[in-house]
Image 1 (cartoon, rainbow, N blue to C red):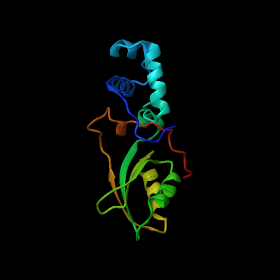
Image 2: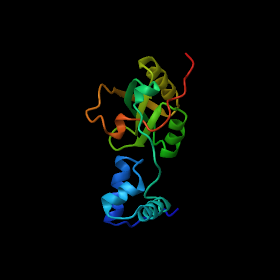
Image 3: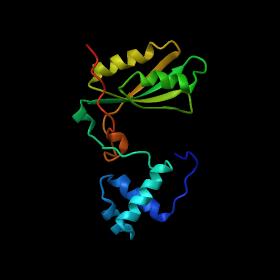
Image 4: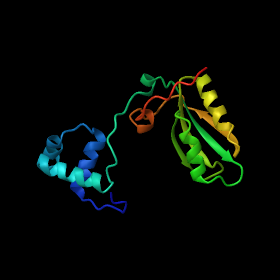
Length: 165
């Protein structure tokens, strides 16, 4: 796979837009909308995958259907300069963390956490806080999604593992 910047034209952009709207759209349907044959669309999609422009295809699932009824964002503040690599190791150990990124500002990282309920969220938070380099956390609970069709409102990964109570 080529990790450099991939070049693509307006037809590629239209194909990508169609796949982002519905990854199950057939090559024939996409071809009809962009003026190409299904075979030509498939060749372009294969090239876009080979060059790393398209990284995969997923299903968007309603989080509550997976048992995730509580959602929060957690700011993480570290002692000293915790390297992003170390933070990444920590967050990988918590299946309830669905996204994590380093950020600018006062916090060192921002975590997106999904849990069964508030009690489960508190357990996750306590597991995160025991890391020796984490100084403090600040949590913000999500009440509702103002853009319910956004990727953040859905889940594209399996439900978190059940932790013993």
